[in-house]
Image (cartoon, rainbow, N blue to C red; front, side, top):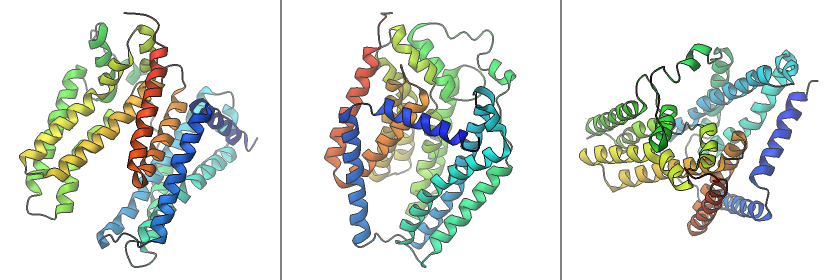
Length: 358
């Protein structure tokens, strides 16, 4: 029984990959993009490494949040298996749980260490970034191990749609339901979204004013931070609702507009605040590219949810956009063509499931 959890999730992973890359063209495209990314990485390692300032050494501490989030995700998966899956006895057994968590970190840690090793090539002293990453990873893992699991109680689920707050019908109702997932707090979802945007604008404006006269890198990071936090919240989508929309007669165009409404508004308020505080073209370009990436990922997820398992969709989108990002470093035109082609295929998948006219 010691490996039932591993065999169960490995089988689900294989099926998820099969759902996402079922055609020969899908597999070939993914392999080509991954090969180009690896070629670029090898070329960078063989050539002169990019020199980063000594302060970049502290990027290695990001291994801590990565370990914390990964361990929490693995524990959440075990909790779900123990409550909703036929292999619940294995998910509750201490030995099986330890083996599952060990293998989870054995899969994640090499990527973190590889990132730290690449960072170590650009900053000194030798081994400092790698050692800092290992310590941060251990600290994040230890904190996640003692952090209590957070469960959603029945009361919180019941409060998700308060009595007397019927969203209505039509496109406005769909947008309200999506915003309710992307925002937090009581009251109307539109009001909550407006408050979040106002807070992001104020925070970006304050960061730009406070950062004047300070190191450019610090001011640059502070200008981007409020938008990043809002985008992380906006990345929360409702797979069940989005999977239902084509059957209810909503087309892929409206679905794309609905999931990108909050990120587009975030870009508008962030760009305005940055411009008012003297942010240059570089800041505006990074803001635009960052928001565009979030929007494209959200649209791809929304178009793939109908007829697919949410976990399979998330895995496919993560793999494809990682391969696109790697390809973009070596051959940007090829990455753009591949992105447009895949989005066209995702749109066709969503459109073909639209069977009922509103």
